[in-house]
Image (cartoon, rainbow, N blue to C red):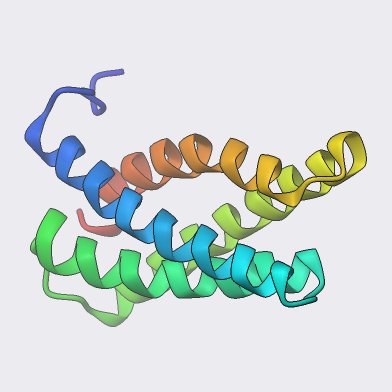
Length: 125
């Protein structure tokens, strides 16, 4: 994988922003589930909150790129793909383990690697 060096400073910063986003994402999801929300609604709300943190962090810190309409549209395409991946893994985890959090945790590395590669080579290019 030429474009993905797991030790590059940019990837490590990307992962740091991803960890921050994931904490917001999972924290809100769990808070909503504990307060009686549907698992898919909670996963969606967590995803959106984490997305806002993620976009702001990566646009300003990781890729230091001035956003444009083209960049925003591409980012939203990536978000759509990662959202579907997340919901699919949450559905599988609910079916197998009756635990949404397992699916959410399984989705994080998939979404992180997919997000970095598409961000670096397509969105912020």
